[in-house]
Image (cartoon, rainbow, N blue to C red):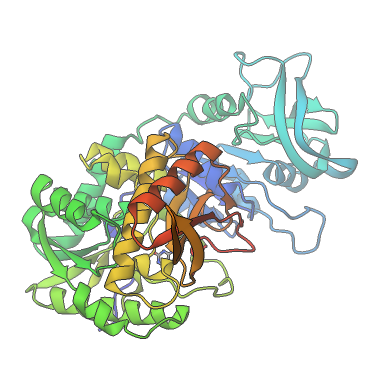
Length: 525
Ligand code: XMP
């Protein structure tokens, strides 16, 4: 039987929802997060949203995102005009504001020049701008990114202020409850941006700030109970934050009817397996099957050094081992997965070119017998972390850096052997400990060690050495799609280098990887 499509009943969606209509801007997710930070639940919806959808779901407000298109080009995305008459408060941002102007009878012109970055907004002299409210200064720094601009407001609308290249930077019609803003209130470079969003949500749209950690947990627990009923569920734990929080939530909902499976591939970081067992079995009291499968993985990896073959070998064996372990759990017909909201949003977009075949528990085959429970399906990563902390998971797990499914296997260039994994585990533990010691753990997206399969000559004491180099990789990133190499302080690099060479047998040289992504990838294989 194929895995069933996700049942929405496992997803907690509160009654009050704000729709963020995605016009293709990189900012739609950011807007949705900002709304949630103001404790109002938001969902990103496609711009093909219809007045009927609005009628059915009754959102408390609608925010139109910015977008890369010009309202003037053929086929530029537009909003179903019926939505303007649905009586739901609307806020258009950038492209969204221009659409309001254009679709309701105003004019959007091409400015002489675009406006990108910081600029100064000046409120209209009579301060008619109800979107701004009275608490923010009439002149303020705002962040712009537009070429077109509104030149004439539609009938019934007023202009709330301007910037040097946007004669109408705010447009509003209190009567129709439609507002627009040309600048980006969602970015941190607009210091009073949050005030504007707060004003729109709370005062103009009448939303109440009820999307709190407690409400997220309560509604999730109710939704999981409703979906699983008296059934049993299993969850593959990877040690990462997503599967950990998903498991903790499901455990809160159905207790001992959840069994977790932790496949120890032998390719985990130093101390990681112990910590997973300690946290889930001992502290959280979750039933855990700890499969020590290291020998099987090392046997299978003999002679495998080509990166894609290595990934495939590890991925396939992982699935086999997981199936064997979970097959013994009688009556389990639900599988818990830590899918996050950005994965859900992005899965709708065209496939990017495949650079590497990723493996995680989410790569389980279609013919698995389970129905999926995905309690994090509408949460952003920062919300998942807060839920994890609230549920009592330790910081080491809640703030754990991303770790690839194939583990250290893809950080060892060439053949993966027990000895080489042990060597890398020691070096990697030093890198991570020093990053933590320097207080950089949450600033750095990932920091780890890579073991190369070359040797170089060195001298230690009076002895010539001929041994392996360790490469330190540390990157900053927001989403792993792009990344920059972290400008770690020299002193920190020096400490890492000294410790690795002194403490890890078989290493006589340390290099620092100064490649961004692109052109490099974060992992080495
Ligand atoms: P790359 O190396 O493609 O990695 O720049 C981007 C992000 O994905 C992580 N990664 C994986 N995660 N299974 C995973 O769950 C995988 O097979 C895998 N490979 C890479 C990587 O650590 C980085 O955060």
